[in-house]
Image 1: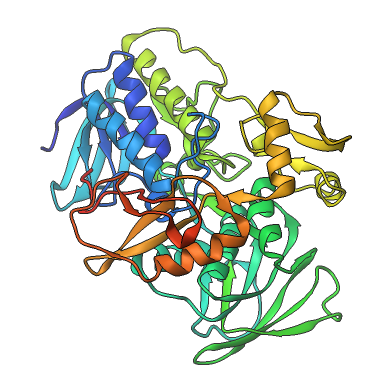
Image 2: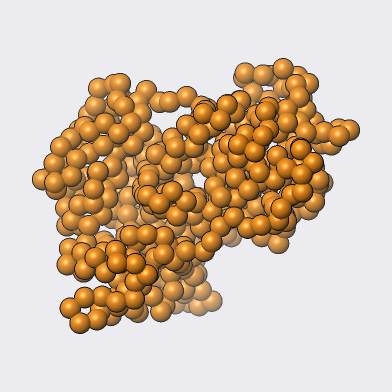
Length: 460
C-alpha cells in the first residue's frame, strides 16, 4: 500500500471528517481516503446516546449513534475508501503532493501520497492535572467524557455521589445521565456558564440539580478512593465548603487535537487549533482543516457544515478551481448559551422553544404565549407549560454489552425516571436492527422503545 496516490486524504473519521470526505466525492474527486484511528467511523458520537444531534443541519433530533449512522451511510454510498484503526503520524510536502505517514494493523507503517489533505482530528478533554488543583489523586476522578464512555459503552457506574466541575455541555449532559442512573449529583460548579441553554434546561432544571456559578474545586481529598472536595468562590478560597462525594467529574473544556499540524512546525491559532481561512484552508496550500481541531464548536451541526466546506474546497484545489471563501453555517437560537437574561425570563414563566432551530424565547401573553417565529412555537410553549415532555435515551443489555435506545416520542417528564428504570430490566437477543421496537408502551408512558444503533455493530 505504501506510495499509493490519492486525490484527497482525510485524517479523522468523526462528523467533520465524514462530511469532508462525502463533500469531496460529491464535488468530483475520485480517489478519497478517510483514515480513522478507531475501529469504526463516528468519533465520539457512539457514546453520546442523548438526542439533539441534527436539529439544525437535518431538521430532526437524533441521538449520537443515529447521527453517526447517517453519515456512515453517506460515506458508504459516496464510495469513499475507509481505513480504520489507522493513525496518521506525520505529513510533509513532496513535490506537487503530500506524503502522509500512517500506521495501523491493516497497513503496517507506510507512506501514502495525496494531492490534498484535510485534517479533522477533533479534540481531547482537559484533565484535572491541567487545572493545578491541590490534593491527592485517588480513584473516583474522571473527565466527563471518560465517565460517559464507562456508562454508555462499558456499563460501569463511576460512583454513587458526584460533584461536576464545569458548566460545559458534556458536564450538564452527564449530570442528567448520572441522576437517571441513581447517582446523587451533589453540585455542578464552575467559574462561568459555557453550556448551551437547552442543555441547562433539560439536564439541570428538569431535575432541580444544585449549581454554583462562579465557584471551583479548590482541593480534593482521599487516598484509595475520593472522599470529598473543597469548593470555594473563584478568587475567595477562604470561603470554602467541604462536599463529601466519591466521584468528581471534570468538564473543564476541550483542547483541539492539533499535534499533527504543530509537530510539522506550523503555528497554532489564537484558540489553540489550526488557523484557517474562510474556506477552511490552512497557511499550507492544499491542506485544509475542519471541526474541533480548528476551534471548539457548540453543535455537531456546525462541525459537519464546516467539514463539508473543507471537502468542497479541497476538491476545488485539486481541480484548479477558485476556492470560494464562504461561511457554511448560520447562527440559530438553539445554539444560545446560558445567560442571566434567559434564566430570568424562564423563571418568570417564559418558554425556550426547541421545536425548530430558531430557538425562540416565548413569553406568556393572555391565555397563551407570544414571541415565536412560527406557529409551532406557541403550541410547544403551551405543552411545555402544561406538561413538559422529553425524549428518553438510555441503554439496554444485549449479548453482554450495551445497546443505545430511545423512546419514539416524548414522554411526560414525570415518567422519565420510570422509563429508565424499566429499561434496566430489559435484555435483547441479537441480531437487533436499528429502529426496531423492543418494548411497547414502556413504563405506561404511551411511547415505544426503539433501538438507536444496530447490533451486531455496523462496520466502518
